[in-house]
Image (cartoon, rainbow, N blue to C red; front, side, top):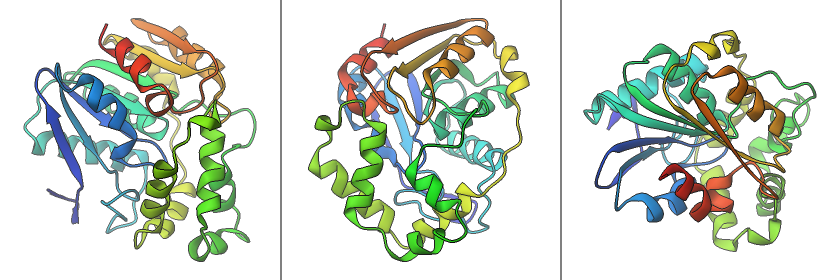
Length: 260
C-alpha cells in the first residue's frame, strides 16, 4: 500500500473484530508478535510500520508531526476498508492513538493505551536514543555509528526484567535501525515539536483500557494514572516489575487483559 508517497509495510492477521496496532518510537510492527499469537484466533489484527521506522522507512516529506501521523493512520484504515475498530498504541503509538480518537471518535470502538506518551514529562527524557538524537553534538554520531550494543542498551531501559531480552529481538531492532534512511528519520522525528492537546483528553468517550508497566523509566506510571483520571470510561491495569513495552515483555498476560 502506498500512503503519502511511500510504500507501507503492514500485515493483516487473524479473524474476528478488528484491532489496529500502532508501535512506539524505534520499534516496528514486530513489537506486536506476542499479541498476534495470543489474539489472532478471535480478532483480525492490523499492524504497520510507521514512517521513520521498520521497513516503511523515512517519510518523503520528512513530516513527523503527530498531526501527520494521525492522518497517516486514517489513510491506512481507509485503505484497508475499516470503518469501526479498536485502536491500540504503545508509547508514541499511544499518543497517536488517543489523538486519532479525538479526531475520529466515530471510528474507534475501544481505545487501548500502553505506556502512552502525551502528557509533558516533568524531567528530561531518560530514553538514551532520544537523548542522543536531540543533542546537536552527538546526533551526527548516531547517523553513522550505531552498534548492536547501543540497541541492547536501549532495550535494557524499556524492559523491567532485562533477562527477558532475546538475542533475536536485539538483532531485529538493530537491523531495522540500520535500514537505509531510518537513522536520519529518527533524528528528524526526535527533534519535531509536538502540539500539546492533552487538555482534550477528558473528551474521549469510548471505553479505554490503559496498560502500564510499574517499572517504566521512559514514561512514569503516574502518567498512566493521569490518563485513567481524565478519561471518563477508562480502566487502568498496572504490571508489577514490567517496563515500557508490556506487549513484548509479558505478551500472554497483557493480551489476556485485552481479551477480557
